[in-house]
Amino acid sequence: MFVDSSTPTLHRPKLGLLLLQSDPPSSPHVHDLDHDHDHSEDSDSWNQRPSSASTTTTTSTVSSPYMISPLNYQATTSPYSKSPWVLPSTPTNHHLKQNMMTLRNGLVGTLVRKEGHIYSLAVCGDLLYTGSDSKNIRVWKDMKDFTGFKSRSGLVKSIIICGKNIFTGHQDGKIRIWKVSRNNPTNHRRIGSLPTLREYVKSSMIPKREGRHCDAVSSLSLDEDHGFLYSASWDKTVKVWSISDSKFLESIEAHSDAVNAVVAAFGCYVFTGSADGTVKMWRREYHGKKGTTKHVLEQVLLEQESAVTALAVNHWSTVLYAGSSDGVVRFWGSNKKHGFSREGVLRGHKLAVLCVAVAGSLVVSGSADKSVSVWRRDEESGKHALLSVLNGHNGPVKCIAAVQVGEEDEESYGWVVYTGSLDNSVKVWRVSENVGQGDSAVVVAGPERISSINSSDNRIKKDYYCVIKSKLTRYL
Image 1 (cartoon, rainbow, N blue to C red):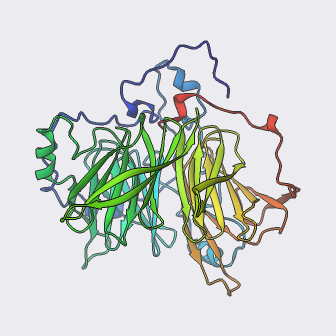
Image 2 (cartoon, rainbow, N blue to C red):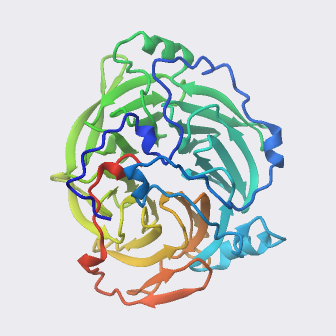
Image 3 (spheres, helix red, strand yellow):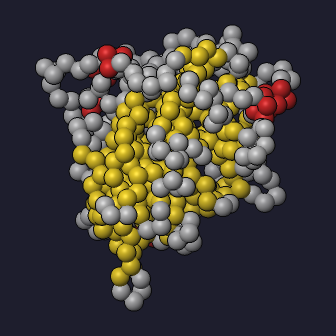
């Protein structure tokens, strides 16, 4: 989709208004006094609610230029009612789980629940956590709806797991901390929030309000080795928290526009991507006798017009990937002389890249064009080959999570990739690192239905892609 340059610039009164009719962020002037007092918001009745395929989605009747955007997805029909992959079904879960272990490449199944668009995913062992604009966090186990817990406000934009604690970032600018009950694994209780109630009240008295986010929390990242949690927000800042005591440590004035992604990696470094079109690299330092943390700007890796929407790192190869609203994934590698240097771009989408994940030598990107591209990096040359394109979603792909299956020397070795979409579903894919050896495969919504296309030179015609430079994709 091309945007007419004659169209007047649209200003957003609240960033949340672009989130497909999701809940707008609450006013930063209103104190949420339930921060540390309500620790049992989950309800046992949740475990009895059946999953089902979504049949209709209410559409807005308000005339808006956003309604013509391909990112403003509203489902009008349900493809799931006729699909053999909808869960739950009659006793086919055993076969679906078996497919996850034996299938080399293809769709394992689809998880659907009437809880709105899927904005976040996280995997921990055999559990899959999904966050949606219904403010609910669902937990899936063995391809079944296992349990769920609910937050009082703010759609769930990010989920990250550290040991026994689950951190969730919300549209209302808060970070909530949850823990699984020892006696009942289906029971998740809230044990705190960031900032804590004391720091929240304290920050309200400070004009800059450095100790809390004033807009949506868009991304979370952990540095478990040093005990830090990083939160990125649409308020243009990145904040640093201590995992052990939930203490606020630092606020980084990172960008001139909304920060869409943050990732901590490679020891003392933190990378941030923003709607202002930049990717920045920060170095963590310690000052004073108390070892106060301070992050200083080390390098600006990218400056462009298109918004940066997602970041991911390959820890083994020391490579950074950045997806942006022009449909391109750019990547940088470590250089001893010049820090990080740009190595190339991956062109595999027609519309904005909304999420990127790394799984071993694979790079997986999800897009507003409803597709998922899978690339493989050659460790010796550093070049990337397009292995497969996963098609099956009926809305923009907003989040990706991956987990390894089997060991490298085993026949079952590969990856299970979870993709969450604004079509209200999560698709579960089996992906191998050894597809085609030079050819790529287009995988449609069904296992073993693979048709090969020649892409040995890994080049794609320019007229196949539609470049979007509109700010509409900046805050999705």
